[in-house]
Image (tube, rainbow, N blue to C red; front, side, top):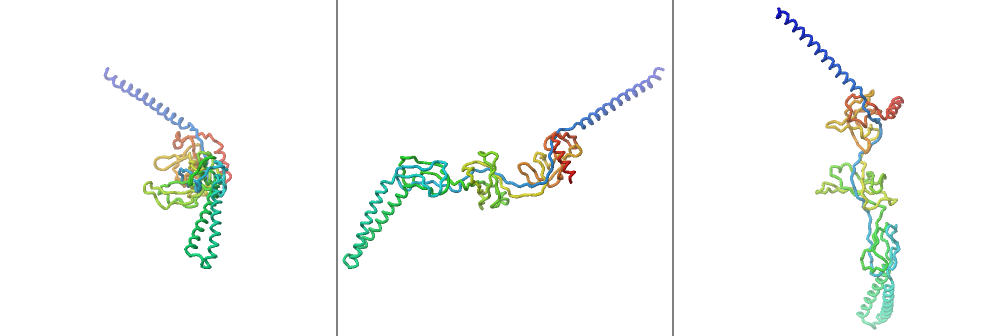
Amino acid sequence: MNSKYKNPLRVCLCLGLSMVLMACGDENAKEQAENKEEKKKVAVPVEVAKVVEGSINAVYTNTTSLEAEEEATVVAKTGEIVTKIFVEEGDLVKQGQVLAQLDVEKLKLEMKRSEANLKKLENELERNRRIYKKKMVSSDTFERLKFEYAAQKAAYELAQLNARYATIKAPIDGIVSERLIKVGNMVNVNQAVFKITDFDSLHAIIHVPEKELSKLKVNQLANLRVDAREGEYFQGHIERISPVINSNSGTFKVTIEMDNKDYVLRPGMFGRVAIVYANHDDTLLIDKNALIAEEGAPSVFVIRENSAHKVVVETGFIDAHHIEVLAGVSAGDLVVTAGQNSLKDESLVNILNQEVTQQALETAESR
């Protein structure tokens, strides 16, 4: 009798236990589903920007050091003591302007002596010319007097030249970049006394990899930023491109002429040059921060009905602030620019900069 009733009892116990376990399992599954649903409803805070139509340039950038196109070292053409200096470093000078004066007393005396000897020989030559016509003097004597007169005339002209050289003048227009003498110094012939730099025409020299050769052309516009003038941009253009590729570096030389009428730029300044080699007008642009650079195709998160949708895009030109989008988004779309790392496809979002959303809606309504 005991065995007869034991088996049904065991069966009932097993069935009851199974039902309890099933109920617990259903409860856990329901709780997990509710948690999942709850998590899905949590909005991720993001910032967005609107896809706009505009223009964008393709730019090649490189570093450079500015050089002067014209720079002259002024040398003394005669040796004497410096008596006066008329310019200082930083002064703007014109070609032919007097820079310094050397002592001319000795030079003037030499010029007077040469002049006196010249007049003496001139009179003697004229007298011998008259008697030579009368055959009263030999041709050798007359020819010797002519040579002596020519030599003395050259000596007189040289004395005059040395007297003029005592006044040191600027050979080019420019700015005195260096003064190398002081009053009272004895200067020698060919000694450097000043350096003059023409600031009007400054060149930015860059060495460009050969793969960029097809992009750059003469007269293309270039913008320059220098460390000494933060926040300012200076314009120039490509003046010339070397036709030779350096076999050691694989680069070619590009010379950019900079506009420097206000003398703001200086030789030796370090800067960054950007050359515009192509332009696209009326194209779609997104904020540079919106692009997600992943392996494979780049993508962005587009906002649709308060959720973020990951969209693969095809990109074009890139500048400092924007990226050209050739496919994947439309004008007026909102793309996430901050908070992408916390997003998944179809995540709910809380847009922090709501004014951008309002602008997008107003734009859509006006169409």
